[in-house]
Length: 272
Image (tube, rainbow, N blue to C red; front, side, top):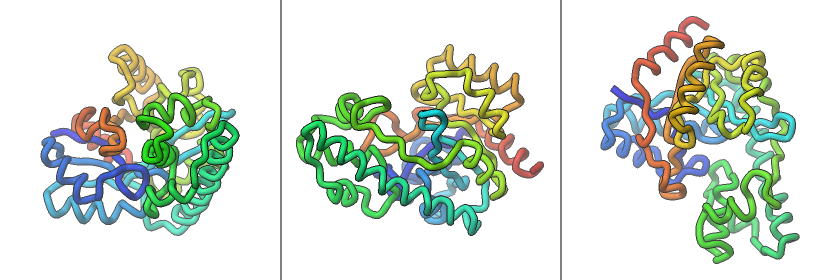
C-alpha cells in the first residue's frame, strides 16, 4: 500500500478538482493521499467526500507559507482539526497576504517592462488561494513567456527580479498553529532552503516531521534527510507536489511512500 502526501487542487494552485484528484490517485494504485493546498482548508472536506466515493483515504492536510530570515519556508500539516476557528482565522489572514503579494509582483513586473493585469491572475485562480503559479500561467496565457518554467526562471522564481515574499508569518507560528489544531507539522521540501544547517532550528521550533521523499531530492539527498530524521527523531513523509497540468513534470504518484509511514503519522497524532 502506498500514499502520496503532497498534492494540490483547484482550491489553491492545482488544476485538478477533488474528484479528478482521487480518481487519478486510484488509477495510480494509491491507498491514501493528502491534498495540502496552500494556506486554505476549503478543499479538505470536498476531497474527503470524493475519496469516500472511490475508496481512497484522504488525510486532512495543508501547506502553510512562512518567512524566515528572508527565505520562504513551507510547513505541512497533517491530521489537524480543519474546522478549528483559530486555524480558519489565520489561513484567512494568509489568504489576504497572498492577494497583496500578487499586486506587489505585478508592480515589479511592470518595472521590468511586463504589463500584466492582476485581474488576469485572479481569474485563473478562480477563487482559490492565489500564488506565483497563477502569475506564471497568466504570463503564458498573455504571451509574455512560453512556459511556466520560463516565468519562474526569468521573473518570479526565488531571488528573481519580480520575486516577492510577503508572508507575515514565521515557521514557529505555523508549527504552533498546526499543533494547537491537533495536527502534525512537517518541514516541506527541505532542499528549497538551500541551507540544511537551518533544519535544527526548525526542529527547535517544533517540527515533528521532514518531507524526505520529494521530486527535487536526489537519492543522496534522500539518504541524508533520512539520517537527519533519525538523528532528530522526526517522522518521514513524502509526495509528488502534483499541481496537475500546471506542472506536468510532477504528476500524482510519481513520488509515493509506504503506507507504514502514514501509520506512523497516525500513531504520532494519537500520542499528542
